[in-house]
Image (tube, helix red, strand yellow):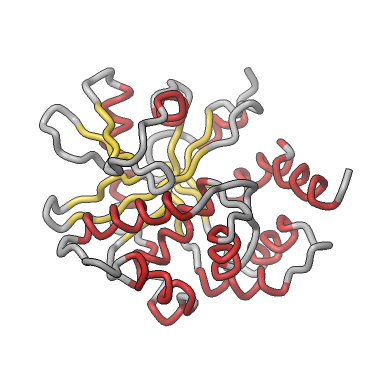
Length: 270
């Protein structure tokens, strides 16, 4: 087994996965998370220069007026220019470069760099993840974003890695909380792609959003500046979980906020 495979094994090992949730998870309420925003801890000056260079390419023809339409354009550009591949554990600048070079990038990588593009365009954004309750070794989770829509005066779910949004009966875009409340009460929900050049991956959408055991969590307190600093010092011989543990030990870690479910249900055995 080579070093890359060992690193992947350690990163995905169930023990480390569950340990991360034990350390980082917090039970929350819908009210508690309402004002959480990636932008509050990450300013424009904390975003590496490469994001500004790529941003010019994203909006080289035209920049929409509304923040929601700008966010869609960012997502479409990333989809069309990132092939995807193995997950990356790099600083944001290096991760973006590797993704654009066709050397990797999973949903969490896309969600993270999407956050940074939103910051430099003054779009309020935050990142969510989903897992299974109880923990399922056959499911690796998924990451996506929410952006604040000024026209609707609310948060709106935007899956930046597959260009998908969700709607209810009134055809109004749904937030993450609204989506899962409707799904769990078996009410009408429809999903639509805002990228006309691709089809909808029905199987993935249903697996990630409509499984009865899915539970969402909001990622808060993520400082791009802090993680960039520590990850840039990491060499290939240091597993990424060691870096994350150091940041946690120093009290600078991100956290998982569970507004709909008790996170302890993750650890219940089937």
